[in-house]
Length: 251
Image 1 (tube, one colour):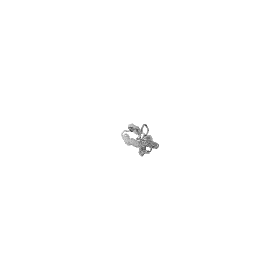
Image 2 (cartoon, one colour; image 1 turned 180 degrees about the vertical axis):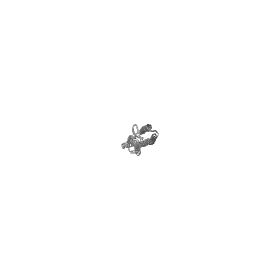
Image 3 (tube, rainbow, N blue to C red; image 1 turned 30 degrees about the horizontal axis):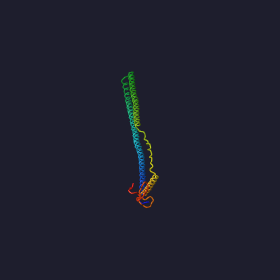
Image 4 (cartoon, helix red, strand yellow; image 1 turned 90 degrees about the vertical axis):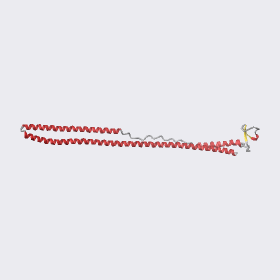
């Protein structure tokens, strides 16, 4: 084979091989980049899912803490209300007792005066009227205390209803406990160009180089004559230039 034919064949084969290797490497790089991007997207989705859950759980825990604080405030306010009711009741009972003692002293003094000033039946009649008046007065005091007690009971019920309404309003504002969101879909890895494709590309490059070398040999090397004489293609046959008819040019 002529050197020029060998060079052309090797050049063609080398160019094809480099193209095949470059295409294979480029395909692998593109596939790796796409797979890495899919992995990064999946990892970011997992991080966002965890971040969203932690954020919602923090807000929920804060709302639960506020709910507990509201219940405590409601309980303390209710206790203060009942304490005020009991204090007013105790003050009324104490005042009634002191008034009863004072009235008893006044009644004894009045009966003594009546006995001294009015003799006989008139004194007894006046004493009975005084005792009746004292009884009516004491009954009125007891009735007022009883009515005040019923009022205290109703006030306590009102306070309890207000506290329950406030607690229900707090509970209705409490959000549901957060839950972890669904898992993102796992990425599907792409398959890059296989080694067989590279082998096929190198084989094609080798065959192209061999074909280019044969074509160059047929054009410049005498096609097996070994003479190295330049030839030309005349009507489909390789003919030496010295045998070509006069005036015939290269096709």
